[in-house]
Amino acid sequence: MSNGTSSWVTVLLRLPLFYNPDASGYRNPVEDGKFLDTADEIARQFGGGTLFVFRHDPPRGFWWDEGFVDRDVLALIEVDVPDSMESREWLRAYARDVLRGRFLQKAIYLKFVGPVEHLIVSEEEVRDED
Image (cartoon, rainbow, N blue to C red; front, side, top):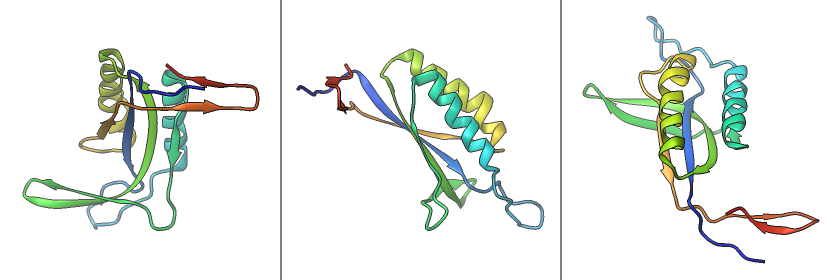
């Protein structure tokens, strides 16, 4: 059995649980299907991932926007991807062309963490994913 680092990174996509406020300040919840569609598209592109939708005590994001601190309640998609320009370009275009519109956001934050060390363990075998 061996494990080690590879040329993979983990990407964290932070997605809002609620749309931006309407004119009266009300925030409608994002439909569950939008998270499932996103997870399915990510899985088809990269072979899998993990969707975290926290209904109780979800993570909260905050950032500066035009001189004010914006806040959001977040879901999270985590996916390991090859650390390549192709992966980064696909994710950039996907966030810009699909996710911004789907979740009605000004921007989508993607965080790249790596290199990733991972090991797959099953009944049949233990193998590196390099």
